[in-house]
Amino acid sequence: MLFMVACNQTPPEYVTLKEGKFECEGKPFFPLMLNYVVEFRYAENQFFLSPTMAYERENAYENADSLQTAHQLKGHFKLIREIGFNSVRICLDRLDSEKEHYYYPASYRKLSLRDQADFITKAIHELVQMANKESLKVMLLIKPPYDNDMLKQFTRKLLSEMSHEPGLFAYDFFNEPLYFDEKNDASGARLVRPKNEAISIVREWKEMMDDLAPRQLFTIGFSEPIEVFEWDPSMLPVDFICFHTYHPLRIPNEIYWYSKYSGKPWMIGETSLPADNKKVSYADQHILFNDVMQRILNCGGIGMGWWEFQEIPGAHFEAQFTGILNREGTTYTADKKHAILGSLKPVVAAIKKANELKKTDNCACMSNYYNMLGYSNYLLETQVIDSDTEEPIEGAVIRGWNDDWKIGLNTFSDVNGRLKISSNTPCVHFEVSAPGYQNKKFDHKTSYRHVPPFEKTMNEDLEYQEIHYKPFLDTLKQPRSLFKFNSKLFSKYKFTGRMPIITLKKLDTSGWEE
Image (cartoon, rainbow, N blue to C red; front, top):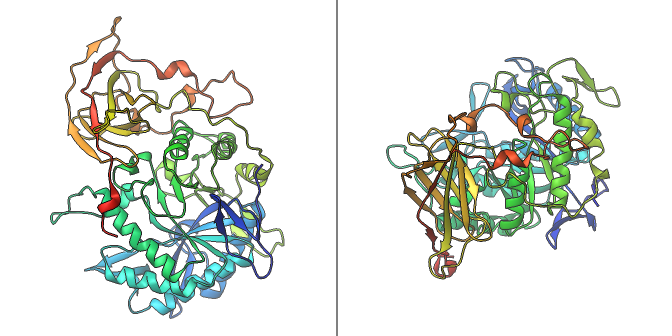
């Protein structure tokens, strides 16, 4: 059964983890969380926090001064709580830098982490308290403090200043290392970060938390399971993991992998289905919310986060239409004191009833787990084993790329270590790892044989097409779900090939520096 507790008694208690689940005020707490982006502004000779301009009128802020903007923020938080969310993930990691000097951009001015640290931490604290007054707990996404002393000093100050704030239930120290880890060589080229190095960085963050903010929890927001190549979630000393998953064909499979192989309490920090009611219907967005919530409950997740508050004009389709508010009309809070740009989408009805969903025992591996996007041209087979024991490795993750690195795809090894790499274009570059194991990169060109009768290969760039789940759904199954796939569509291929066995060495962390 799903419990959602507002935790609005006075004074509120801290959210804790007990036996791998959140608790608040001695009761189970399931964060139903909305992602909300804020930024600093400068107007009337002062800096202040504001909703991101993307939630405002086109290329212009809605309000002219700090008091009106504070009223606007309060209205947004009030509406978020009325919809049924009990938490917000406030995204404050969008900083700029010049010669190692970090600052928040604010209306063409620079708010320095070094020179204005007192003001910045005070403004963040006031924002957290504003959300708490609307019975919302806060997860705070910050810029990851590594490889820069200014970032580290500011983070220590923030942790210290917020350490006695029960409304702040967790810090997210890093948004998607897979995409935003800035480990580069002198020329700016991306470098692989060894797992021991990532562990050392996160261990330092954990020590900061234990020293300065022991009452709050600590997480990282992972993206695809190929995070395991460098920022291995099973090895990092976080309290719990968040992960971000999008696209109906991917979501149930990535939930399955994280739930089975991360080895830690987990929640989804970001998910959504973009819906403009043209290319993708509002009805499908509504269905997806229920599908994801049910899958989280069934697979043992402890929270869910939706991306995001409002549609973002001008972005590509997948980024533009995920919000719970569109850009049409006006929405009012229940007390009529706040008018908010945009109208609520039908997904809100599912959010309001989320606590009525019941856990079942169905966390089965999906029919497309080994071929998530339905590739149907090439099938490349191999096996991944432990280099010392020669035992098969279950749950290994492999990514293959085509010759010019423009198309990539992922899959997983089964209980026998077998890898079946389905693709629509031949893969020649590979990277593979598994939780607790080394990372390995290599090239291999396969001699494929065609399977009679020969058919023309199709959809070679399927990975990068827009949302394309509909042809894979089994529309005969009721009630309708975006996770009910036609299993016959994920085992097709026209060419087959084999690759030598892949060996991985299990990492021994006992000698790594504490």
